[in-house]
Image (cartoon, rainbow, N blue to C red; front, side, top):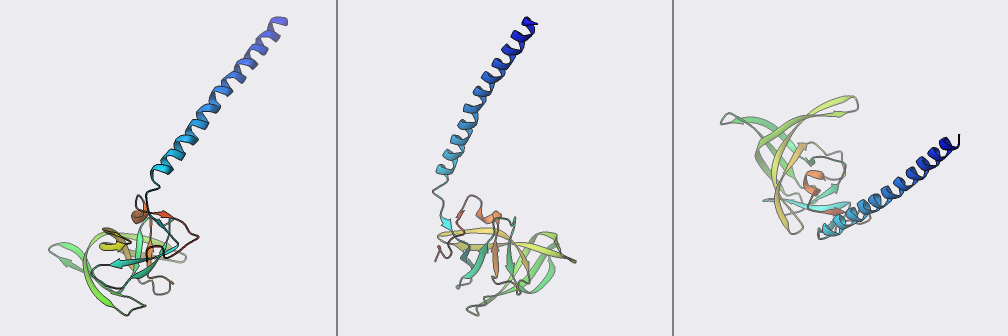
Length: 176
């Protein structure tokens, strides 16, 4: 009986000592995460709503920043698919609600996908647009759809945000 008691005691002590070894590893991981955040702090901070320019248009569109959206989205009118050189393309009109500026684009379809909405599924097309946000000009994929019922004509998702911006939802219009 005494040997059994000593064995249980030794196992308990051993188990306690192994738990102490685990704690520094967790603390080390937290410190590593903090270092990664510090390394990426050079990214510009943007707010909940920001201006975006769809080149070659001159007036900004105000877009809602949505870290939950995978792909960015754009409000378009007169969306007409067509074929060019055996590839699928789409023509659409972009009208700035604030300035009235409008431009007709013809873009190759990058991909098509289904959006599930309550009670109705919608087929959307995605195109690559040349855009300017802040000081950076780049190309990014946008799904195009009639977003006239939404407050903002653009929605900026993770495909643009990742590696470019840090989002602070307590502010807006930081890129003006």
